[in-house]
Image 1 (cartoon, rainbow, N blue to C red):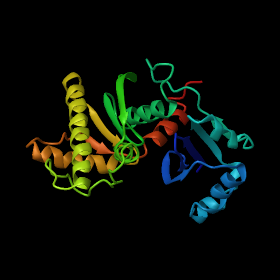
Image 2: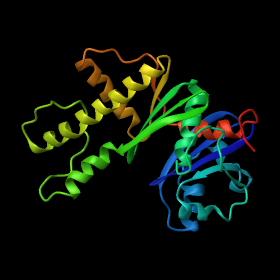
Image 3: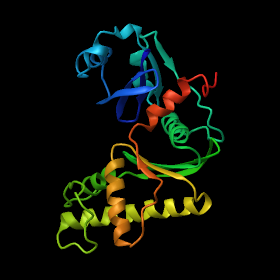
Image 4: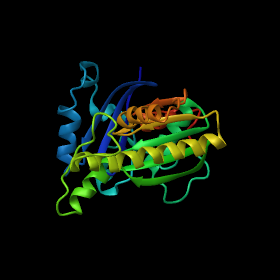
Length: 258
């Protein structure tokens, strides 16, 4: 079986997946690097790789890569096996749309079917919708942890708080819980409004939560819906690997646009 790597360089982290043909075997995430030597050290020593992959020389691994940070992408210049993905066959995108977002939507549509709504919980919270292999629009707002951090950074007295394990009460009686309630309830209401509007247009749709906070937001959204006495749509899933499925779909001869 062919071993290869899918690599996505995002705004704050590197994301890497090891594939054997179309089977995703293992995933790693690490912070931006400062030197090429640091990158080599990470790729060779700190992945906790299974022996099956360690026996494969890095230079012989095909790497399909996407980057939205040119300064980080430069560290791969000495690796001739890197194949940069410049264009995904998703129609109707706009010129400044991030390629990582395009790749993830392509992965969602190819794996779960069209139409699809992707909710990506990261530094930014993004809503990205597609139907018939076309981009149908989306929205971008501050992500959960970015909102919590902003309240601490841009005020004199508000503390830095972590996301709660469970949906907070609306009417908090201390500062930390008030911050949690003030961030999470509007955020979840916004998620619900976007899902509701998209489902009005495309009732038979897949809804995929992804990103670093995807699992967490999906769980809290379920709790939010229970409070609203509504049922979570049966076609809602969590998949943190949409970006990798998009790269894998590009790699296949059936979907690659050359």
